[in-house]
Image 1 (cartoon, helix red, strand yellow):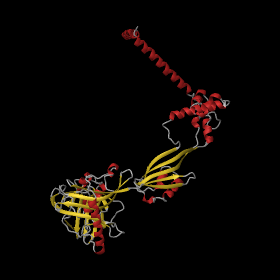
Image 2 (cartoon, rainbow, N blue to C red):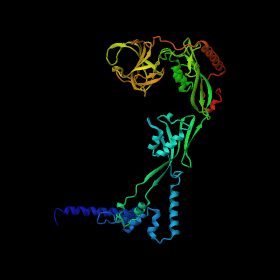
Image 3 (cartoon, one colour):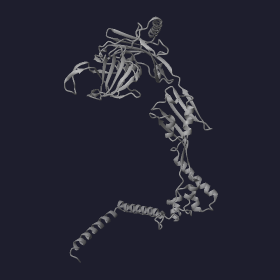
Image 4 (tube, one colour):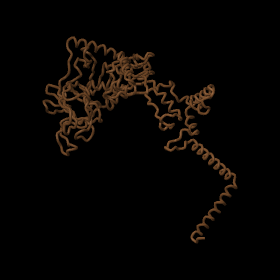
Length: 535
């Protein structure tokens, strides 16, 4: 014996004796014997499954492909097809009643297994589609897999109850459609027959099933362009489409709300339960008369008389009109009444003497703004030295809508050095306004576009030389910047003659309604509270 291998043999002999003693000790207990038996049974089961799986694999032929004539392989393949299973096991002479019974039992088993997880309407699918910017409804339907004929037919039917041109990006639609498959049956039969004598030589790997063409037959479209309308386009038995517009009858309720202003008009009105859209409109009404940064103080108050529309279930649906609003600012009271002198023009707001609330220019071109830097000399935070600040900065988040301070024409829209994205609007009579550090411009507007007062034409940002998000606002008189908080601009229309007499009559009617309507400190906004609201 090799002297070098002798220590190794001694080591393995010693290790074997130690293992044997441990095994004997383990088998001496019931748990040890049961562990041995269970492990052995597991090994036998795993080995059997492996042998069965290997037995179903077809031996490779000379070309490397599996031999489809190998019987276990054919059994394994065709057992996956319920319709061919019995033909394989019984042959062509299988009794018809046996085939029918067995197939029915397997179908029933599959149906029972899938119960509760399958579509309640087999072959019918639903899908939610959202209209993107620039899309047409017909084009979006085709992109969703609907045929051009179905898409055009549905849009033509819709046009009878709703103008498709009024659709806006972001509108969602619920679609339902039937799906199916068209296939070449001869190709299927050749693929299913593994011993066919065609060019595939019986090899499924060489068989090519016919191309399938998906079918999507549009069944219905449902969408709500507004809370009042629910439109459905349905396919009829003859394949044509019909549209129906289910209109929800909204109920108007009159509210008279008021509160003391503790911080801002917006927050105080919201705390009083006044809807946000009513608050925003009220701010716009007073934006010509009130500097919301300087004129408001704790202890001031407001009152608003408006109507709001609710669903039959009592849920708030949409804003109506503000007939009257009043603000008490220190010892000054400003009351505005709604009146429409010309039926072809939008209604306006006038004070008790018939003077329009609108001035030539708004004092605040953004909602909820606070002045962060006024007009005058200041230390420039970027340049590092003091210089004249020829405008007013309003601290607002990026993306806040910026309104035109007055009607006019856009003279410049683009990048302007330290102003960043910049807009200059000419209002005529030597007046113009400038807006700097914008993030983006409203679509469809450009140099030469005409804008109306309070129209949103851009959104605030911090482009150019800016240390934070804000709007830089200037008023220019004959191209010279003036202090926006002190400049006096022309007032709006003043009623006279028969217009003034008609307005005074309307004002008295509103005052009588105010007296007979209870002041609400918390506006009713749910069905249970509507019984307490004035109807």
